[in-house]
Image (cartoon, rainbow, N blue to C red; front, side, top):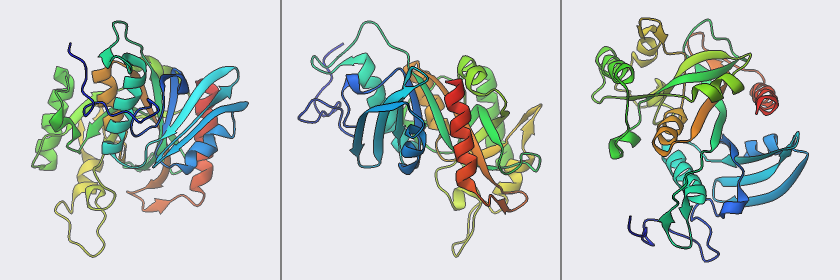
Length: 285
């Protein structure tokens, strides 16, 4: 394979990857990813020590130890576009020789745990609960630019969701890492997460602008194929699962349920829901 060009893999003057501003020694094999940059500090406050910090745009990185395990926590900001940047540069740090610009012959597998907030799509998933995502359904268009392999079950779900929701495009469906889900998801609800490309119309919210899919929330709530139901939605999980599959890393998404859209209830203390999820994930890492 030819060397990767300077415009395909952009490096900073210090040799760090362009957006994350990190060099290979700055990360561990276990990564906790959060959307909100302020949530990095909520995680790292539990570390026994913090050995490294980096702030670059919305990408804030802390590396430290927890119970003698080296852990990295990085913020991505909101949306699947940022997750693509995060995952691509993260993989480059471990699987590309940044000096020669050539992929390494031996590939390293990272463990990436998304830790974020989410809204419930079902009455029986209460505000304040924690949910691990088995499958992710991407309503965003990121995978239109990649050749994502999906198995027959995932492809069948994608076609069925498109048809029953009346979408003008086919979503993509990706499963998590089973081994990581079993490890991180103890004592959590298990569900299937919809990833939306926005917070308002793509999640059925209408303020002053009319929305194209006024029944979206109801359709997501009622959708099922056999025993496959949609349980919650947010804005990043599908990109984590898709990028993880294509780059051969283990990925799982843990969700703090801070509102129930069916019951129109929002958590009175969302920070506490997130805090308890952080504690639970750190104990299982």
